[in-house]
Length: 384
Image 1: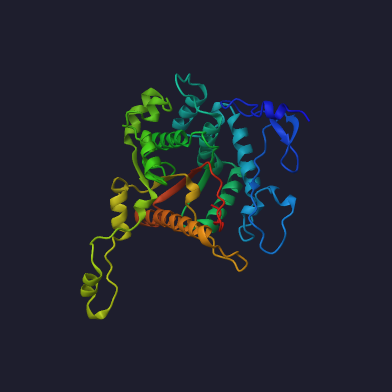
Image 2: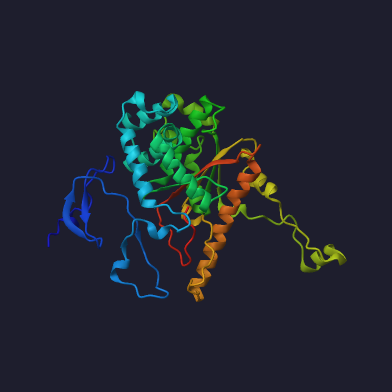
């Protein structure tokens, strides 16, 4: 067998559109042939220990994403992803006057495609992630094919996230999610500054990380930070950098959504204050007080954009089914920890959405979920 695949597994430059790929057979093994096209998006779905049947060798492989969707949702993730990718590819090739975007967005697109970067140049996957967000926001509502895809995405969110409008941007490990976040913030902010009445754009951002270490690394998203990506990575034209100062960015970790105790009481003191009625004494802060603590800078905004880093930790737990295998020991403890963390994260966002919303409008217009890790837990979560 030829060893060409193992000698040169990477065929494309990370800065250019992928124009070829190693062909794989039905079992996911390399055929040693190079196909002169970009590889289609497919899901390689790991299968857990079987419950009532024996797994065959064919159970592991490319399942077109069907294993990740419920019958109730009735949508094919792989098909939608490839349709969106194809639409964005076709749009990218259009001449400038046909982009159907705002002048501010067009300026950023031209900057990203033609600027002579003196330092770190964005990868194609980073640019494509932002272009996809732009296409879905500014272009898709204006074209018939886009409206169909938007309805699919809206249906998926109604099923999995009824209170939130979430869009997942998946990048390979090391591809640079923070740069994508900076590009999304710049796109939204510059448009919001020039068109303050638009519902599509905002200057308010809530960035949620899974822990303090990652939270601290995200400080480069603040326009005033000494290492701000907008300036250091040359993501924004120099003459537009002053307008980035209008962005209001809150960086937190999901643990901050936990309602804190407003007063520390011993068991005896709590019993004394409850008195004879026996009614439970509520000493934790309200949702409104929690939001005032976590993101007071965003309280006056009509709508905000949320950026979830490592978003595979944020999900709505799937209700247990009758044939679910009972977890034991460490597996059970891990599943409980994961579920508790995910529940805190997503309910915190729902609280922000409700409390910042006004006049029937949601407080959060869009949640961008950025992740490099597929979600595969002991007890699988609802997609979204």
